[in-house]
Length: 420
Image: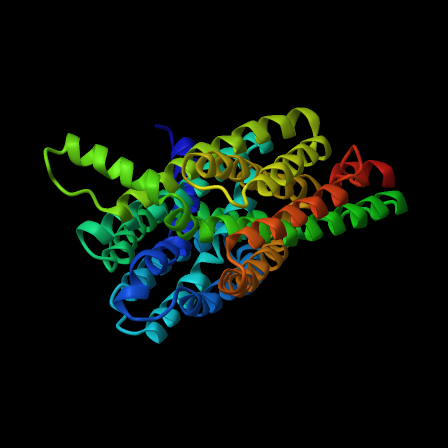
């Protein structure tokens, strides 16, 4: 494997780890902590909320530091820092202690999206497919959080779900540092030269299009984040409630194959969540290819329609039908992820790209954090059927916003051409 491919692989592993770390607690809370600590699921969500606010709030300073100092240097901080604090979180003894650990995880997790995506969209030309491939790794991290945590709950205890990934992330961080050590200094000089280059003033038409696209990006980012957080965080709990019959059948089948050894329900629930997340990740590759060919407007509208249909169909379903419909709305939820990143990558200028991604993820992850109390409140008062109807309405808002996207995105190159 050449250095360029290894570089992209380590960036992809970073996206995998980023989403895994932020969702370990979702499975731990849903399947074991509410019994072990005698705290309700809705109350446990409150301890995760500050971590998701940190996930959003620290994205902007992370992007600023990356542009001013070094993007690769910030990636080293990400890998090693999140590994250390995750390991420490595995030793928490109270809800408050685990809340502090989740906050620290959120601080370091905030680094990846503004920095990693800025590297991907700057270094490689096939932007849509690169973002999509990188996004698939992130979604596999979401899936693996449910699978690995469910398995470790049954066989090693929930604490190891924080500790083992922490050790792995530290090791990857050391490998990344060794690969990019010489490039960090060269990157600093290049970024200073790029930032100091004078650029002509953009045309009024370009400015109008840029404002229009930016407004749509940030609106759909906020609404899409409600959908993404509600589906990824709550899915283990949704499956625990709605797939009991299917999980029991799978456990009985597995027990037969294992010659009488007991198969635990947490593993089965985690496995089904993993399957749904992993299969739905394929949507990003399809969307990435379509973005490069057709542009974001038509693709985004199609994804919004898929979400609207499947969220509307989910209320009242259980077992097999619920699993199939969950796969449908997760295809939509994951398929939407690369679209806004693609639009930012095409419209933002290079020297400020990490900071603009930082603003995008401040919006995204602040909404993610605010969505946790929403999930808890809706679930406690009305159950998940009402949540699905709220998500269908959110998909309708996205569809309406995307209809006013321009057919061709404004780009820095078009701005310079118009100015000349």
